[in-house]
Length: 476
Image (cartoon, rainbow, N blue to C red):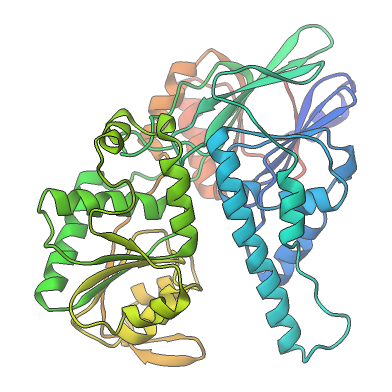
């Protein structure tokens, strides 16, 4: 981004400033300024080192009470998770989102508040309650306060945010309720347009409707998470999962599948139910050990119009959707502690997806030294996480303060991602060559974003930049 761009522009020009998920993949937050109005696109939680994350999430680079509205792309915590902090610090405007995202917000933000409260409590205990006590970033009352400001907007309906700004949602195909945002804003000479991708889904995945067409715009702000990677074939990945489960059952072992509760867990459950119905895996108890995933499944079932036609039809015909048909949800912690020690084979799905916290660690403690068992990693495993350590060739693994013998079989399947890859980006973006003024690539590590930027320039996009936090671009 040229520094002169933000300094030589008249104040009346609509601008967008990138404050989160710029040069990285967490804390999505972008500030639109049109005249005297300020509108936030996403308000995500920055996830990283504890103290750095607390500082970044607790302090906004603008005054929250000056924000007129928030337009939300979807309910993943790195896109919505800091809304309670924003309202707590003075924001009292509307939070626009799709109807499924509204229902998921209540579930996801309540869970996030619980984590914030528990995290603050653990820090205070570790500090022997030394003053000043560490306060949670936000609490359940803050979530309820933020939720009262949520306004649901159906896909395709154009809505006025202010007299000079209006927008509509377009299906993004990433998770239930995920949306791209097409926005129109008044400029000094003409109307300006902005298309914001949010997180875009892959082509050909089941459960959700496909990603819609990105509208042409003066400015396209696009995610780049896997801008230079190709996902493995989905059908091949499913086949490998079925093989891992069948082989483990033959040994009378258990299969552990760590998975994030929103998005990945629903995809895995669907694949397993399909495998049972088509007899591609033996009949075996499947446990989803996650109260959060249970609540998310209820939201999915409540929005059949947001599901693919095939899934919606199966639901009408009485097939279990993300439950039933051999799948059992475990909500109570007492039941959870017994799962790994129950006799006989089973499949246990539990969070977190990188094995760093949550109920998966309880099961891992019981089974990590059992050579009959298998752990199937279905998500990206960040450096330093327990999941990444499982992938290393060392005979032991350290977590929860001790070393464990690593005799469990470890399988890594990287074809279940719900993010677009390089080929998906080409399919989505190539039709826009010559129809977009500027392109800004966000929500990707810089290597991935820069690689996608090069690809887009080679396609014919003339103005493609990977912004840094604080960079500003004129719309038009």
